[in-house]
Length: 305
Image (cartoon, rainbow, N blue to C red; front, side, top):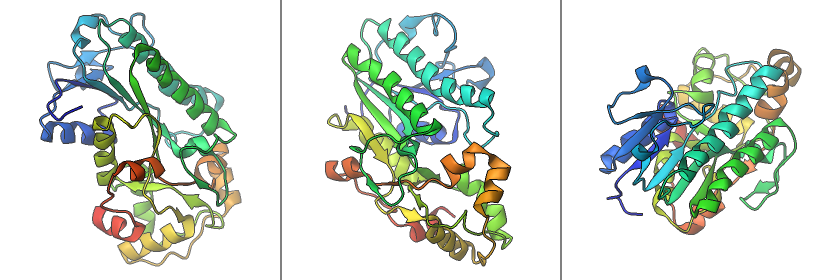
């Protein structure tokens, strides 16, 4: 794929990562078409309304002919609600069902896009202690790994249409604009930050600028298909991350959050998202020649803050 590609389809473009991807594509003079769920969400007249639960998901398929590729960034927020059984169903549906709906849209086209880049997560590996996890590692056990396996399997359905499918396994995205860091900053700036549990769990992370560059890199690198770990090459323990963030905001980090308190507050999410140890590395990105501008946590935090 070249930077002169005609059209890139995006779903989830209203989210934090999606908005930055749109901006980066526009800066590279790449035309984007957004799938939106509500008319009021549409900033451009060329955007297309869709409903993943409807059949067909898009009323006029002809609007989507001539796409070069699609980037699918969909999924209910993992940390905005307690994981009740109903919200867990929403987490799964917002990822798996929307991806299957998108593949149905492509199946109806005379010429499907050449590539589908679909969001996934390093949560697919689950609790793995200190094991170094490349893309060849098997999935773990639990709700998040099972969700990610189904999510990636849904995206892989597009391979039957001759499309290159890349499952982008996002780690913790480092940016003050959203996600975990935005939630942590008020506590840390108040001097009330500390480790989660014993702090020994590994954390796979990536600075937002590197993530956006990596997404565009996978988009134009036709040899990258299958799982791609979208993480920096230097995962850190929670204790090291806590220390680096405290230094970045120039505040002490002496108030740890005990594991039992996290479980009381967040339930199942505490063990699967806050206390799980996942030491993923970006083997495929590095071997293909991608260069990280912010590979280490302390400079990355200082850069984004």
